[in-house]
Length: 99
Image 1 (cartoon, helix red, strand yellow):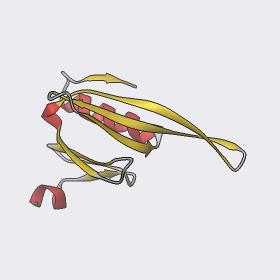
Image 2 (cartoon, rainbow, N blue to C red):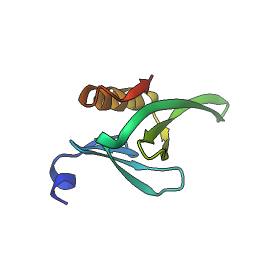
Image 3 (cartoon, rainbow, N blue to C red):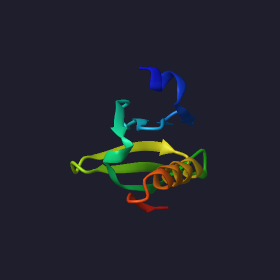
Image 4 (cartoon, one colour):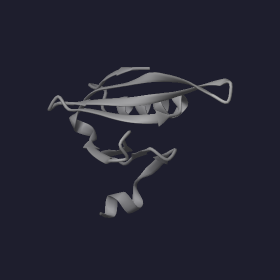
């Protein structure tokens, strides 16, 4: 679609945001497309893992829709989660958010 080709901002390799949609690549490598106006709650869960004797922190970006659907986009850097949450809540102030 035209919107995807012109108005999408990439946040890393897992999350894409347009004026109307959020696109995310889930844990199972599925692509989820959600209308921003359908999001009622957006939050992140921190994920801790040990890799090569050092701790790695990533997040799962979680979206809850008005149809009670939960979409999880995993392995997203924390700063990207914070930025996406801020962008969504700025555009749709009614969306509940946790950083």
